[in-house]
Length: 147
Image (cartoon, rainbow, N blue to C red):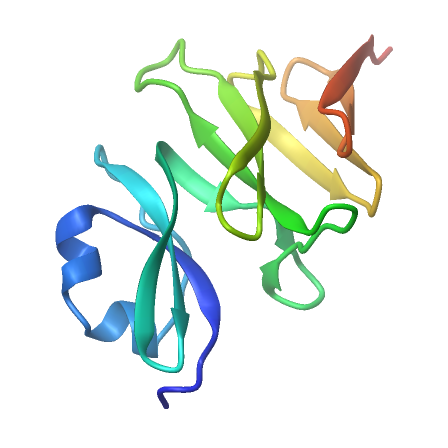
């Protein structure tokens, strides 16, 4: 059981508990607490990076049912909000394997309708019928309105 290797977002008090968060990974619980990214390797829990995120989760590889691991450089995409409320928009942050922020931007999307992950680009569709193409290496985004 102590050999599980994974990433999870936890509030500080949750990270101090060596309980169910580490033995039974699951989907993120969206509450009003800012959370940090942690890793567990062989029973050793370590915080990754210094940043905290609100309503955070990793971009998932749905087929593998785990965080989508990016290459060149290796890392992950954190999807989160800057603040709470109806006006809060979706933020994207790319982190490396140590949790260091490589780039971050506000997508302007209030309600996300669909996510289309690929190796080099990420497609996001908002409920306002707009399609966004994100270059995962550079963090650039292009927007197009759909008919």
